[in-house]
Structures are given as structure tokens and as C-alpha cells.
Length: 132
Image (cartoon, rainbow, N blue to C red; front, top):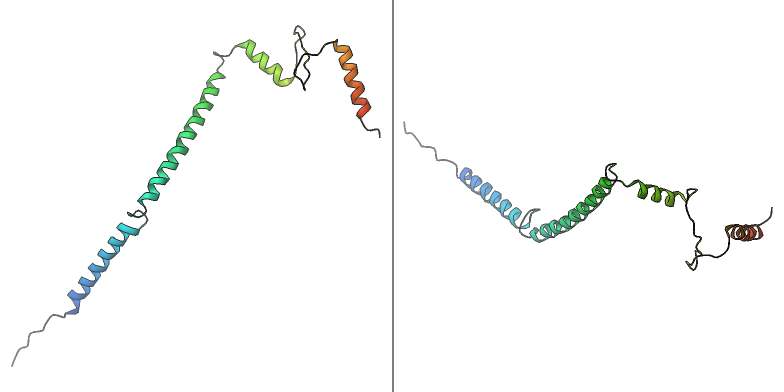
């Protein structure tokens, strides 16, 4: 009885070769044109520069806020400056303060007594107010 040897199929090595060549092609495409490839390197470097600029701007803002926070430390505050700023913000005055009235338009001090100025301002307000 004659024996016959079976030849290995030719398509198995061919399929393996095609699969490996396809995988190498995919890797080559990704290295050149992929998201992190050579072509996108310029865009990535530009994004890095923009983000560094934003980071430095934010760091400067953080430093400014931390400086303002350290100024609020009770051991470093000058009570006279605090009361002066509080009065200026609240438009209040102490009984012992000297007030100088300034014309808002010209910026020059107003002459005359406060009573006369108050009467003039009240009469102008009353005269210009619409009646019901």
C-alpha cells in the first residue's frame, strides 16, 4: 500500500505574512499621521506653548490673591489704614474728622459753609423732582 505525504497548505504562511504586513502598515501610519504622530507634533508643541502661557497667567493671579490674603493677616494690619478704608467704602465720617467738600465735576474744593451747600443741593433736588 502506497503512502502519500500530505503537503502543508500554502495559505497559512501567506495569511500570516499578510497579517504582519498589515499590522506594520498600521503602526507606520500611526507613527506619521496619527494623533501623536510626526505630523501633529507642531500642533502639540503650539498647544504646549499656549498652555504654558495660561499657566503662568494663572500663577500670577494666584500669587496676587495670596499676597492680598497675607495682607489681611491681623498681625500685619494697621488699624488706622483699616478704619480709613472702611470709612471711605461706607461713605461715613467720624465726629472728629475734618471734611473738605469737593466739586465732582471740577475736582476743586467748594467754598462756603456746609449749611448753604446743603440748602442749595436740596433746593435743586426738590426743584428737579417730578411732582405726583
